[in-house]
Length: 93
Image 1 (spheres, rainbow, N blue to C red):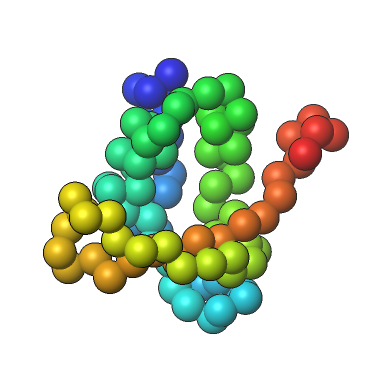
Image 2 (image 1 turned 90 degrees about the vertical axis):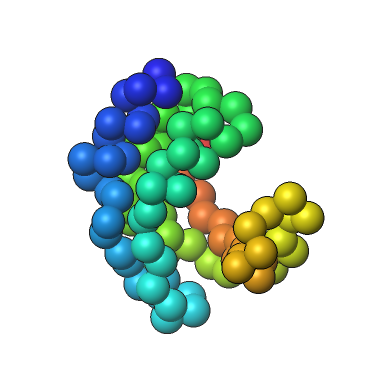
């Protein structure tokens, strides 16, 4: 499953950008995002199902909160903007 997610992201999302309607800021799909998606936390069936609509999600997601940089994180990262949105797949949220 990891290989499929990485390949889809690289071929269809990496290098693209979308503007979030809530904040008006540009969100970039980077190679770091590919790794986070494929390896971050647990890779499960729901995450794989969402990848096909992933390009649209950052555009319509609403700002939720600011997350502090982890102590082990890169020094050039200030923190993280967290967003939330809902996805419906086959009638299930």
